[in-house]
Image 1 (cartoon, rainbow, N blue to C red):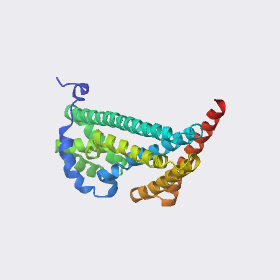
Image 2 (cartoon, one colour):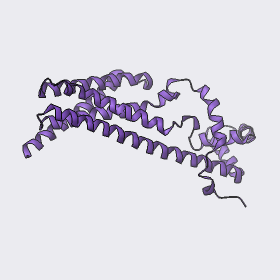
Image 3 (cartoon, rainbow, N blue to C red):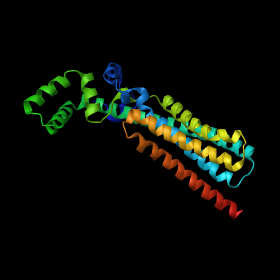
Length: 256
């Protein structure tokens, strides 16, 4: 008797894993490389580090006059935020990877136990693409002649999953946490120089805006967006966070 799909979900689909490495040679474009795929984590972590820290500084600078206290509080918040971001990214990435592997394992079970149904799915896929019945028959024979090729095909075409793009959760966590910390520390530098409360925050806000502008331009190397629009979008969000934090800080100051 064939085992159920659920009993196979915990296993890693070895055939797809073996095929993943050779396929990487076809993906030389920047977006397909590991560095290109990590752009989401870099932008997310850096953007969040800058915006959350400048928002924090805007609020506390309006209510606390001691720059040393603000600097230490900001530094503690930066490291705590980076750790939280790294842990969250790790858990989310690992959970997503486990889900994808379970889906591929289930597909492997279906190929083994319901081959006719899977062949019909291939016919439907290529039928929707406009292939003729004879062409579809040829494709089905070629695809199903090799179990590894069959699983890879179904994983990609039916599930939309490619094993070679599953980045390690540890790498995702490290990049996200480091990006967050980098963005946060940039905005804290003026507070360790102690020129004065208002000028200090103004310099910090300026650094935040410049960092977001540069990040927005840099990411267009991969995303191919308009550099001006991308940089203004990130900088605009940072300014918005700064204004909101400053207003809230003023309100808290008036309340106490």
